[in-house]
Length: 212
Image (cartoon, rainbow, N blue to C red):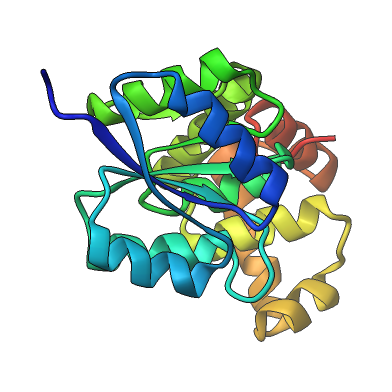
């Protein structure tokens, strides 16, 4: 028989832990090696047991799932991490995608999708739930545009301009002079072939740099 997939589950809700035990307990290839309720214990337990996969809740008291994931990955780079959250907002997904993790799934996902996610990640693939697929694609598209067109400072000015901030407000946020903001914005307009901030906002919307 093939080796089972060893799983560490990290969630501060007892009912969620019970659900995982029931869900995975029926699968012959899945083995829960431990369940813990906080980030600090998760790091210690992962370091000792070296599981194949850590299923990690994003929102926890004390050390949250984001920091916990960073620490586990630094200690165990081969351990796959599946982030778990009720929050599928763009901001939360962006934070998760900045980590070197293997996927994300919503807590609203059904048992079969959760099992599929674990097996997919163990096979070397990344997994993002069906409900976030379009959002992931949009984020990646915007990243490609950012990387290929704008310098980091230009991107800061683009995003702050799209929030409706004026030159002085942008300068104060970035710790630079008003005139510098003007020069950067002029270069952005020239680069994009546009003439004003309204066109800049429309460009940012079309290319998924911002959302309504």
